[in-house]
Figure 1 (cartoon, rainbow, N blue to C red):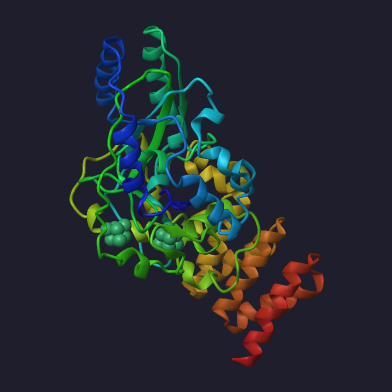
Figure 2: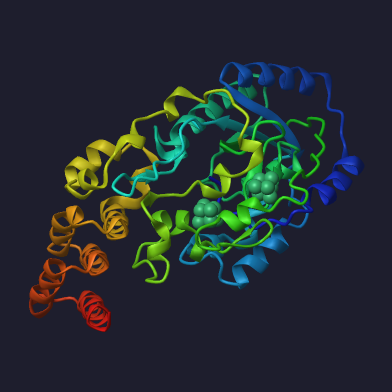
Length: 399
Ligand code: SF4
Ligand code: SF4
């Protein structure tokens, strides 16, 4: 995951300068705590801690400003709202002296199905919600800090901090051209989290960026969302479109989404650093989300969606968002076998679902699908849905 990255490739170089000039060795008590945390983290299956100063990762705030100013964050207004406050841990915990970064592997085993009738769900979303699991692990580490008389606060994604920039500054990995943090020798199928603490631990050095001349991820991106090495235009990224975007998916991007209904792994799948076999990842992140067909997702009602996905990352898309994505995927399947599910979507209570169901029927484009659209048009109360139906019928007439 980590698709919202906006940090530049040279962070590690700048970060190394800072680490070399500001290195502190820590007291014996600090170092004893560090050893204890290392052991506890390893027992939990965490990689880390990698330690950096509790301050702006070099260049991160400026890179974030540039990314926000270009509008690459799309509807993620919380990123604009928090702005550069995200970069500096001290704005969140004034007493903090160090940031300790951790990574927790998730199931990287099977790639998403490419069969058009099956739902492609990003690997990270196949099990339980990482916010809960990783935060719980980090909270157990916090207890160790507290017992030793230190302060510590955990953060996982939902906090106001920039995990990836901090992780790069701490040497946990480097930010690849696909915007993900790559752990040396281990790749990018990891969740990131960390702790801010007042323990004066020795600093770790940033690692060498190893992408080199490779740019496979940039060319593999189905929507050309990687606009420069390490910089993602979220407005084109399928992860954003299927998870964060609350409204209609831009029409020109829908055909490029294929069967992806939640997230996208393409730029990670092709990365050579993800090719070698890796440990299986935390068991909580393994699930059966790889075996779902689109028709069964389209048939979910609100309650069955809640029961099935409440404790998984898919919950974030909400029922209407997932159904919107499924309607697009059914349209991309393009088979008459998808028609009944799309016809059901065209009658859905949510205009957003109806709009994308109309698009899906237009994409199938056979006489029966067009008849369904024609029948719906005079009774459709919502303007955006009517517009979509009219566009589909006009396109069919031109074809
Ligand atoms: S490959 Fe997928 S996840 Fe990666 S940037 Fe492109 S659309 Fe986003
Ligand atoms: S695919 Fe190549 S360029 Fe992209 S992140 Fe991996 S190593 Fe770097």
